[in-house]
Length: 261
Image (cartoon, rainbow, N blue to C red; front, side, top):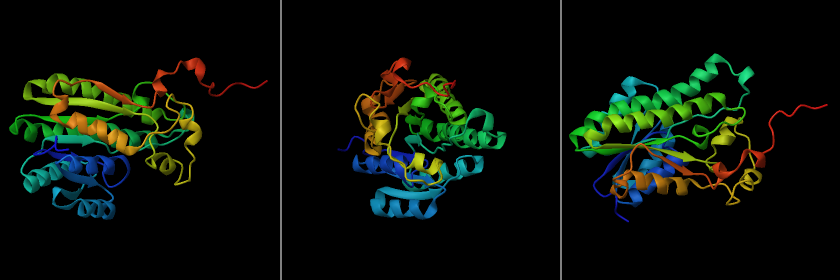
C-alpha cells in the first residue's frame, strides 16, 4: 500500500508498543516517520530497522522546548510535517481516595498536557504545508469510566474534548483532528502499570463481543486511515476500536466495591 506516500508523520511514545506499531504501519504505507520517545535506545533501534524512511529524536512530551526541537528536527530531516500522532501515555491503577496529587498531575501532564503541546506545536508547519492530520490517542476510558483509573480517565476525556475544539479551530487551515479510542490492547501498558508484572489478559478479552483483546496492528491500521487522505472528510470525530466493550449495558458488568453483609 502507498496511501501515505509523500507524507511525514511524527509519532510520540513510538519506541515500542502501540506507537511502534503505528510507526511501522506508516512506513509500510509509503510514508516517513519521526519516532519520538524518552526511551532512546529502543527508539533508535526501531528507526534503524525501518531504514531511511524513519528517524529518531528524543522527546519528553511534557516539555515545550522539547516539542519545538522535535518538530524542527522533523521538518529539517524530512522537509515537512503532515501527520501528528499523539500516542505517548501513562496508565496507573489506584483508587481515587489513595491517589496522590503528584500521581494525578503526572498522568495529566503526560497524557493531557503532552497532547495539548503537540497539537499546538504542529499547527504552523502543517499550515505551511497546506494542511495535515492530527490523530490523538484517547481510550474507551475517554468515553466512560472505570474503577481505579481516575487520573487516566480524566486525561483521556480531556483529549476527547480538546480534539473537538482543535477540529473546529483548525478546519479552515486544512488540518483535521480526530481521536482514537482503543479498548484493551496487548501493548504491555497494563503490565507496566502493575510494576512490570506478567498479566494474563485473556479473561478480560472474553468479556467483549469479539472474545479477545486487540492487537497493536489493529489500532495502527485505524491510525493510518486517519493519517491518510482516505479520511479527508473526517474531523472532530471519535473512532472506537474496542472489540465491542462499549456496546455492553452496565447490567452485564460486575459491580465494583459491592458491600458485604
